Length: 267
Image (tube, rainbow, N blue to C red; front, side, top):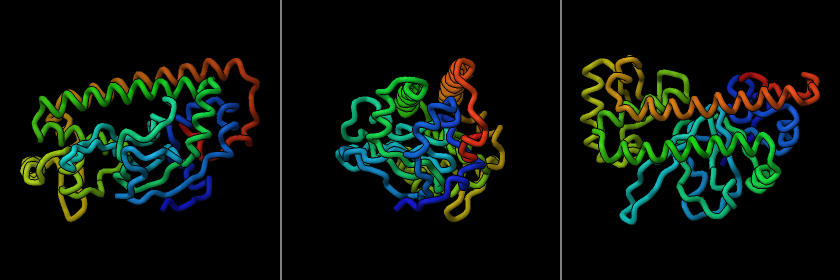
C-alpha cells in the first residue's frame, strides 16, 4: 500500500517532468497529485490489468517487466524521477502492457489515471512533455532489445547498475543478486559470476541485500554502448522539454511565487 505523505516531503527531489511544467499547467493538476511512499518489491499493477493510478517518481525507481509464458521476466524500462508510469495511459488507456514493480523504495507523486488522460487530451505543455517522454521510452525499449541480443551479462549488468545509480543518486543500492537476475532475465549464477568479476576489479562491493558502487568511471568503461545511447536520448528529450517550457512561460502572465508547491520549485 502506498503511504500518503505531506506535499512538503517531496521538496528535495522533484520529478523532472512535473518540474518542467509552466506555472499555469502545474497549478491545474496540483489538486490531483498525491505524495506517497512506495516500498521496494511492491507491484503497482500487473500486465493486462487496468491502470487506475499513475506514478511520477521523485526518489524511487520503478521497473517495467515483460513476462514469458514460462514465467521468465525481463525488464524493458527503468523509470525514475525523469519520467512516470504508465505511458499507456496517454495512448487511449486500456490495460497495462507491463508488470510495474517498485525496484528501489522512495517517494513519488500519485495521480488518477483518468485525470492524466483528461489533461493529455487537453493539449498544452503537459501533452508535449509526455509525448517527448514517450519517445524516450520507445528508444529505451528498442535499445534494451538490442542489448539483450548482443551484449554479455557483464556488460548489461554494468549498464543496468549505472542506470539505477543515476536515478537514486547514491552509491549504496538496496538490491539483491536474485532481483538483479530477475530483471535482467538471466540465471542467478550468471549474475553471481559477473558480480565477482566487478568485485575483483574493485568496481562494486556486495553485502547482503546491498550493492555499493565504488568506481563509477570503471563501470562506465565496462558497460556496453547502450548506457550512453539511452542517456543521450534522455538528455536530448529533457533539454528540448525545458526549452519549450521556457518559451511558453515567456508568453504567460507571471505567477506569484507563493502559488508554487515547494515540492516542485527546484529543477
